[in-house]
Image 1 (cartoon, rainbow, N blue to C red):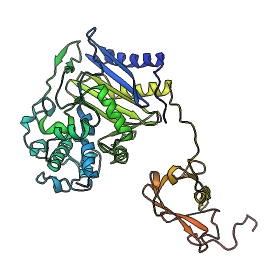
Image 2 (image 1 turned 45 degrees about the horizontal axis):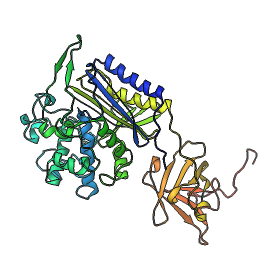
Image 3 (image 1 turned 180 degrees about the vertical axis):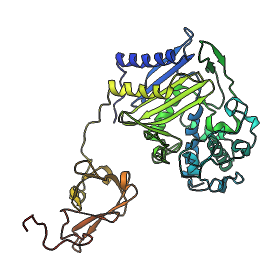
Image 4 (image 1 turned 90 degrees about the vertical axis):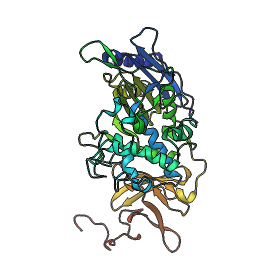
Length: 460
């Protein structure tokens, strides 16, 4: 079992505080609040404010903007897992009358449906949702900017469609479903569609003067599933724990992992980032961060989770622009990971070893390329190039004695043992590729056969 997280060292805590203090000062934000979770518990909270003695804490609500999309995506995946829909289904199958044709639920989740980025004027984030009472008012006349499935194009109206889908299938409002199926099971009692005291006020800061202007906090109506929610750093760290491992009360680990897989090619020039199903995925400094950024007039928010380091960071600011919140949250993860790297679990042998599987471990050759097969827990195996190059994958065992690929080039492919008439192993078959114990083993069923004269030197 993982040992409880220890308190961060004073130097690490100071570095975290320095980073958010710099963000508040340089970004000219009325306040910044942040928190870090490591190994299952909150290990640091910090805040800076322009008003002495009134810094927000981990129970102060801020508006989280597009972080709301991750919550909406979880609710859609729940419908899929219950068999009420398929992600490949056209939206029209469950929500007729949108005029979106063959646009699929999967494309909407991953922002590859080709829909516009925003609703038609007036600016939906600063005007009441009552101005857009119908889905047609959200989509506007030009419903598609790009052919569906071709590229990632972020779309707020797309998540409005998903919210309407949830309501149509569940027969209840998006807010009711969210509270019943996600917020209450995870104990997120300080996350809500509207502000609940104590909460921060949203501000715009003049770009060329140290002056502030209050921002309106409108009810977004149909657009709520794209950016309505208010939350606290404490609640979002609870959400981070769920996104790290899943929770069968809400969504199983396999479905949460599916949310993190890239769903469409990245936009040109953004090769360090992808979008899954309601989750952003970025790669920096050799680490993968998943989560989401969010903004609405008066507020900025980010949640990043690093599975490799078991660290999550949340940062809020109550300013329309200024602090680079997404980068700040990523740097909080960096500070903890670099100052206090995760101590690995002790090596332990398998609880039991199957002699027949053990006999399969070691070198296998695809043609002349050397690979190593290792035995993992629960009868799983891992196939990797001997030099760490080439195609490799982890495989999980199936009841019929085969394995299914979990990742890499062989994700979804079947690995099976091919035996001789006497029961001995002839070769491994992986998606039609033959892996033999010796390079081009003449005793194995190598496609195309093996020259009967065997291997030879230059003088042969």
